[in-house]
Length: 480
Image 1 (cartoon, rainbow, N blue to C red):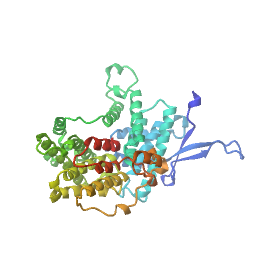
Image 2: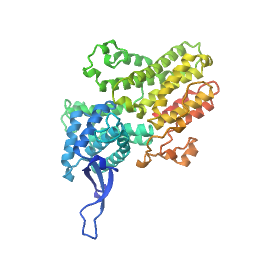
Image 3: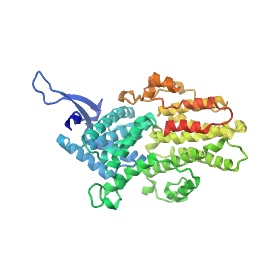
Image 4: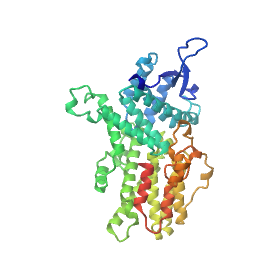
């Protein structure tokens, strides 16, 4: 029914340097000099050549983190989009939403290596990111109400969910984006692309087409996002043994691959890092229960070693990556998935020291914890989530009187850009919810309190035996 159609939305373009807010209201078709007409919401886009520069930044440095677009196809999509801007009826909102999500992602990850091409400084680019996110969310809502949905809508939701999780943690907004993306994917039958019974219909792309492959990428990304890792360590062992040599950290074969080979490209390097970090973070979680068991228990001994080994691999992976000369290294701490892995490693190494009285005098193990902490210390310059992680973990260190070298500059560190201007402040920032949940209130920072302070309460009740069910509930509230 027309009564439920969204209000008109128009799209115009200008220089990206002139875009202070990506949406504004303009007057169209004035009735006369005394009546300028009804205000119409306008989404501003950069010029085509500027959009192409941002797109290439995204394709070269960022797409590996979710890999839900096909480079040649998205380039064609952007060209088609700009070709249709002069014909409003031909504009496809899903294409606009995808472009806006790419603009948001690329400007969020802009570094000094990119400065000069479009922006004078990385900070100038970073400051635009929140505005692009808001515009993309607005256009997605417009598209859902005006169209039957598209693959571009879902791609935009995935890219935005990655950004939102980095700004807010795994918040309700993040969950809404993922849930909506899955529902939209089912409506487009992406989960049935390879179903022979649909091959004679036009409901899904042809099995061998590029469109079908993009659909598969999108669907399996969403499936992987929602599924839990198996709790059988043998499955981890099989998986580790089965991954290609160029994805392994200690592969002799990798050194023999020429540096010009695609298997040593920045994209593969980033994927190798993410794959190993996430894999060993989940293995840490699988075995974390056994850190507090009786030392004579053979299962506890084996699991403790696997848990500690996995945590050390995560930290070593970080140290290997930081030596790589690729843009992802400069912005990796902005992403919550990266922080999850580091946090899990720190939790393991710290608990092992706190739960073992003999470790209080083991300088090597304490140095391990300090080294892991130092990565979070570096991360806090880019992420508000890292700041809260450090605060919670330091309360553990103080409670158990573990002497570690720490920085006193946490209180003086300037906070990251606020998300308040785009409305990314969940109800958890209100005084009422803060009082009900017992968590600290972060409304003064413009950021949601994602429950990180609950770790303080866990350790306040610690009396010699760790309640792992409680700590997992706390972790799930933050990262799952």
